[in-house]
Image (cartoon, rainbow, N blue to C red):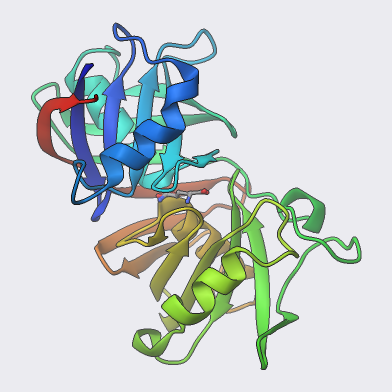
Length: 284
Ligand SMILES: N[C@H](CCC[C@H](N)C(=O)O)C(=O)O
């Protein structure tokens, strides 16, 4: 089976995009296909697979699959790439449009023209903050903010935020020493998170900047995570480290995202999206 694809990334968080407006993929092959295209040796190499699909609920739809084949419900870097692709390939004819995700619709605005979109702004909607909405097990209380979290022989302080997908955010001193590859995979699969969890370690730089590193559910260490950057700004405001209504520069390994948790509770994300490869994946 010859499958046309486009490889794109948001700050180095790369996905293989397949436009299924005019190309049919069977549902039962998607998890295996995500694993296959993501493999750097036998596939194309990426953090996962994203389908760009028609929908009656928005101008365009996005489904995201992680490197391990699991399906996520939202993807900030993926959304910016989908918006770029949709406008450049004239799936949409306006610069502002909606994109359907498994977590609901978001609004996108592309910056550029039909020949090249440089940057995209997404209204990611409102974060979900109740323990049961993350979801996270434990006594049901309004929010999980700086809650003691025993992992191994360490007691960390966890703040949880959902952007339609679950995030566990931890503040560290010295981002380059964050226990990303040691505690990341352990926390990801911790039984307190029945749907697993994306794990972020962040460090405040000043009132307008944070450093950010991520261990992603189903993909491991990635260069960037848009929903994680949104969750990290929300967590920082909840911990009174940053102020609501301010644009925050989030320094991710792959570059900077500009995130604002607005007074109306909507989270805004602005950043680049880039295309690197167009080709055909040959699937036995
Ligand atoms: N990299 C994505 C997040 C993928 C989330 C996925 N790992 C999951 O929730 O299972 C982003 O830019 O938001």
